[in-house]
Length: 156
Image (tube, rainbow, N blue to C red; front, top):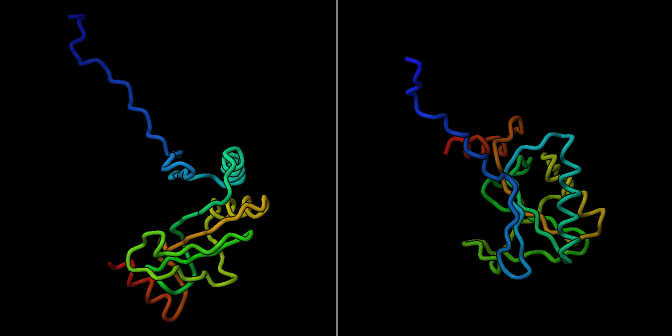
């Protein structure tokens, strides 16, 4: 009586970092962000990423994302370049089975607030930037072949 025989409570494990800064090679740093951001956080996150690139004397940036793309070509990697960045060569980048990244059709909306904010920050700062995008999830109500292709991709 009066003696607690229950095992001691364990402290909760810390959450793993959802934003990582990894130095892959001399001159190559990866910033991986795998956490949802609120609309009110997107611009400040993009500004912080740009500040990191500026502080490290970065000469170009590659933004990579899987997102909702209202274009045909599920499984393809689309590329857009800005601020004088040279287009990336898929073969040289080690992408198996790819001769070239396909150009992202002009006027294609980037339906991801964080990616759009990053693109805006890099464009405003005149940072040479290449963007590589692929379909990240089904795009409803596209109509026609694009909708059928998206629906088939979800069924895999």
